[in-house]
Each structure stands twice: as structure tokens, then as C-alpha cells.
Image (cartoon, chains in turn orange, cyan, brown, blue):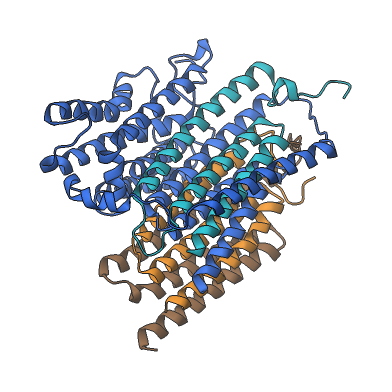
Length: 97
Length: 105
Length: 107
Length: 313
């Protein structure tokens, strides 16, 4: 069971690694936030798996805090996406120029 | 414990990457991120080196020091950011004077 | 392999499927809203299946409940963030080309 | 074998994300990568059997620092609008020089790590032997509040000094005003709804972390940071306004933790040593210090993210 759970953790790690491409290439800020959000969820899943694999259930508390703080970080990123006077940013519309 | 060594080397690599960002980036807000990478890499190096002893309980002293370090690094970053904001408000630029390109450059 | 282990394995495989599908969707779908749709599958169903899969492995009821709670938190957060993302994308489409400039680009 | 494979994959990912946050062109993407970096490093800490550190990293490294950067970035971008875009490429020689320098520094560090004795010097057994005197069973908490209490006391003072430093950057005309800007999206219904639901949950989680800190990973820093994030969320959602920096009750909350810690420490002089906690009541004192510290840490961290006053009172 131990190795099996780690195997699944590796698979999810690979899966979220792929979503990094979305964070890197955008093209919009919302895309980047979404990529980061998927990484957050995948991170929670990995923490659950490694907690069960190692029998170190205290790791679940890290997952709880991650779930809360990932939501918080998404909101902070989002508020900056939606701030109307936002002059700095990359395009927030895929088809915009 | 091979894994601990793996994380220690990763810490070293993160320090090097952060250092590169610190040198190679001119906008200060990017340098702050690079600077935080250097600090985080050092914590990782420190923690991983301390965790090399397999089979025994983890050493709590480095862990406590790293927790302290993370919080202090955050407060330093916040101060850094406040100073940058003031600099930008005064000068309209987010680069340091010596890094600002000459008009004819 | 006992029944519980089989239960865990089956649910983990299902959860992994949704994670991979969500990632592929996020990478391959053509526009923001369909990407968002893919993302929420990984968030909601993928993590939910993983949490359910691990419940029989938890040594106490308290921990099993905690697994469920973690899923609930992520669900709540994901629902709200997705809603905001979708709406902001619509809002920005409306004001296309009005005052948005490209990043000057740090060197 | 699989755990080592997992660790190796995690390390590759950490390095990739760190590199991306340095080289990616948009500042916004760099911040997103930095947040992801914090999350991955937190997983690394759990792999190093340092769950307390993982909690601190995920809360501060990923959450609060990300929020701090995002806020700062958009404000800097607005202020530096007029900035002529100096989009010049560094000379190739300079890049090679920088790469050599960083590679050299890295190689030297790796060489140093390889020179270290096989077995790390550990204070674990010493902490273990004296754990009974502290009344707590989480060794990291014992170190933070009891064995090396002076460290933690000074740290809480450093936080305050940093906040004073941030406030000192306020232009004269805004002094005494509420920190931060008026947020544009206070009327958003989704954000308002979410901002109303999540903070109460988060406050319970934070309190749980502080309470459990005496016997399991957690404690004042982790719990206080979660509280800070929830305060910020409530501010973002427009549910509460940041208080005036001159408000007396705010200042009281900011110094509560360090003052309580110091008072207990001074009282300790009469029972033995400065910052020494009397073994029979050590657990009670530890918990009191932790709660006081958590309140101050939450207020200080939240205010550090919000930043200096930007409008008049």
C-alpha cells in the first residue's frame, strides 16, 4: 500500500507539473491563476497521499492550511486581475492584442 | 538518507537561481522575489542538512530556527516592499538610480 | 489484497483520471471558459475521489472526517474562485482594447 | 524506492518553478510561480519530517508573501506608469559572468555539504531528555517557547520593528489614516459571500493549530498566520475596514504578545532564570504566551501585507 500511494503521488505530481505550462504561457492572468489553482489542489491531494503512505497524519493539517491559504492567495491574485485601473498587466483577453 | 541530500542540493540550486535573478534583473520588484528565493533556498539547505540522520527523530532546534527565519524573512520583505513603493512614488521608476539606463544608451 | 485496499486503489485510479483529464483540458482547450470547466473537474471530483479513497486508510474516524473537511474547503474555495474568474473574463472582454497596455517588460 | 523517486520529482519541480519565477517575463507570472514554489517547498518540508515548518511555509511562504507581492506589484505598476520602458538586453558578457558567479557559489556550497560529517550533529536527544520539564510534547514548540525563548521573544519584537518601518514610509499628509487603499471591489457579491463564510472557518482552524501546537505540529506562528490571512480576506471582501494606525486598541493588540512574553520572562527571574518557565505551570504559561503571540502575530502580519497608510484619516 505504501509504494502504491507514493506511485499515485508521483502521478499527480507529473500531472500538476504539466499545468505549470499554463502558468508560464498564460496568455491571460486568469489562465495563470487557474494553473496555480490546479497546482494547489494537486498539492492537497499529494499531501493526503503522503500522509496516508507514511502514516504521518499530522500532514493533514498542512493540507487544511494549504486549502485555506490557496483560496486566499487565489483571491489576492484575482483582486489584482480585476482591479480596474490595472495598467501594468499582460492581456487579460486571449484574443486581445 | 539520500532524500535529505537531494533536498540539500535543491536548496543550493535554488540559492544559485535566486542569486542569478538578483544580479540579472533590474526591476526591484523582481529582485525582491529573487532575494526571497535565496533565503528560502538557504532554509531548505539548512533543514535538509540537519535531517540527514536517518532513523532518529528529527532535530527540533533547526526546525524552530527555520520557522523563526521564515517569519523574519517575511517581515523584512514587507519592509523592503514599503521602501520600494516610496522610491517609486518619489522617482517614478522601479529601478535603482545606477541601473537606470542613460537616455542615449 | 483485501477489500479495503481494492476500494482505495479503485477510487485513486478514478481520482487520478480526473486530475489528468483536468490538466489536459487546462492545457488543450481553446478558451478560458472551457479551460475553467476542465479545471473544476480536477478540483471537485479528482480531489474528492482521492479523499474518499484514503478514508478507509485513516486510523480514526476523526481523521477520516478531516479528509472530508479538506475536500469541502477546496470545493468551497474553488467554486468561488471559478465564479470570479469566469465573470472577470467576461467583464474584460467587454472593455477590450480600452486602456490595457502590455507590460513594459522587465529586462 | 518510490519515495525517493517522488522526492526526486519534487526537487526537479521545485527547481523548475524557482527558475521560472526568475526568468518569466511578466511580473504577475513571477508572483504566481513564487506562490507555487512556496507550496512545493511546503511539501518538501513534510518529506523532511518537519511538519511544523511545512505549516509555516505554506501559510507565510505561499499565502501571505504572495498577497504582499501582488498588492505591491499593482501599486508599483500604477505609480511607475510614466516609466519609460527600458527594455534593453544585458550584455552577453554580463550574463556569462553572472552565470559563472552563481554556478561557482552553488558548486562551493555543494562541496561544503559533501564535506559535512556523515551524521548530523543533533540536539534531538537533548530536547527529548528535557521535554518533560516543558509540559508540552511537541519538541518544536518546546524549543520555540521554552528552550530558546529569547529567540522567539526577539523575533516578535523584530516583527513590530518591521511594521514601524513600513509605517515610517508613509508620506506626512497621510499619517494617521487607515492603511491600504480603498478597494475597488468591496461590493462584489461572490467575494462578499465567500469572505463571510471562510474567515469564521479559518479562525477555528487557526485556534485549533495554536491549541494542538503543544502536542502536535502547529503553534502560535502557524495559527497566527492563518488568522492574519482570514483578517486580510475579510478586508478584501469589504467586511471590515483596516483600523486607523493611530488606534489605541490596535496598538495594544500589536504589543500584547511580546509584552506578555516579556512579563512572564521577567517573572521567571524570581523563580530561577530569565525566560525560564517553572516546570509545574510551564504548560499553562506556554499556552498563555502562544495565545498572546498569535494575536499579535496575526495583527502584525496582516498590517504588514496591507502596508502603509495611503489616504488621509
